[in-house]
Image (cartoon, rainbow, N blue to C red; front, side, top):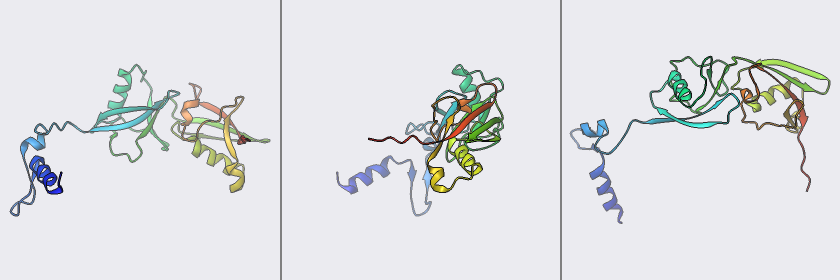
Length: 196
């Protein structure tokens, strides 16, 4: 189809009208969204609840944290005492905080406000507390700084949950490894090298 035909069809169906007198005119039906089937915009977010995997959710564009909690409750999640954290932020969000407008819409829901973390490296133990929405990448950075590892040596180390062989992915949230005790212990270990 020729470009001119495509453009004419587009502007014929387009809800905005252009003229020299009024640069942009829009029909009431287009504003209401009924003429072209436009519905309320949705906000897509990703949420992990405690140890549950990350889930994709759709909320109304004007949704706030309280709406997210109601949605989770409707999905069978016990929301009493549940706090909503934005990934990488140290404080929980207020119930009236808007969900829409976050550049990286990843959230973590947890009952712990802080997680007490211990990282063992050789004979040393480093302790601090973090929000459950803290990523393993951020925690690993903190641990290698505490261990005073050089850049090359730091790249060869990962966090491993103590007394296991589990080495969580860098994008995992700290709260995913914590039960109601709000504590977790890691070992800072060398990456396993795969030789072929």
